[in-house]
Length: 336
Image 1 (cartoon, rainbow, N blue to C red):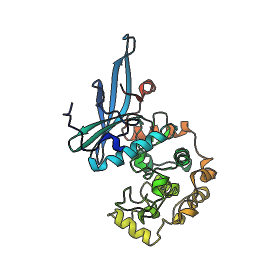
Image 2: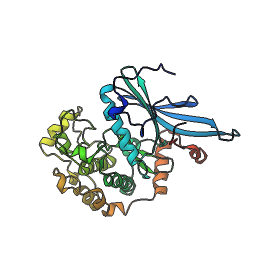
Image 3: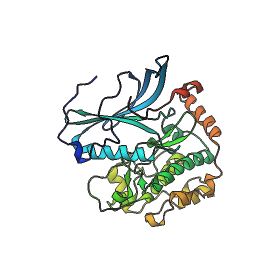
Image 4: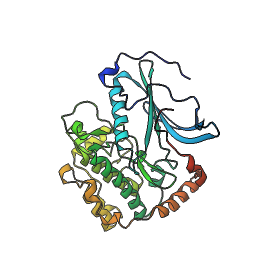
């Protein structure tokens, strides 16, 4: 176990360390990391096994889930607490990755947070985007994503970073919104803004890039780019080798948008995109309105999606979880 440090100079009564959100202790010792799933800007993601005796001490309870470990300076504490709060508010929808108990400890000049998350065993949609599929398979993914967006928007929350990396697939083929690091409440996003722009170039809405106020319609711009990414296998705004926020900003300043007529899109797919491509957010559909689009009603079933996706994974040398393994994918929701 890593060395514990005295708390940084931020008292609990300032409201940053929310007792209703964070358990101010280390995660249990009987939790074991069995697989390193990835590394991000502030930390790591691990698949964890938990083996503990039941209340009667007669058998061992085994469960598997993900722990997202964030190590960050004191200056980022408010942002991390916001991420935790936004995710917990939205966690009870089937198309949002479930977030369970969250541990927090002082760490050097800041804090370490350990977020317990649902294990989406089939990973993100990068592989799906790069493989051959039909529009009806894309339609299935889009419909599931829109269900998730509808739910969080009803709670006045913007996801803020919708991309193929932040949409995951469970062992049952359920599509899940994940990573609420950029999420925020409308009451904050509709105020005048300043500071650095964060997010995935090509997916960020023009109003966000222009440091203007924004709301749920920013996610709808991202949804359109997300749909094109699934269709083409790449970011439609990436026109050269270098693609960063500045090159993306230059394209937006020219009101550039990928020419849909040059893509082999069906009429219904173009109709879907026409509701999302507007630079003026007031002209974009919201998540509830766009659910009436025909492409979402002509999509494949979850079983058909899984049949295709399992073929994609096997052809790429990736393992597929067995049915009996899925029974232990349980996220702890209270301190153990």
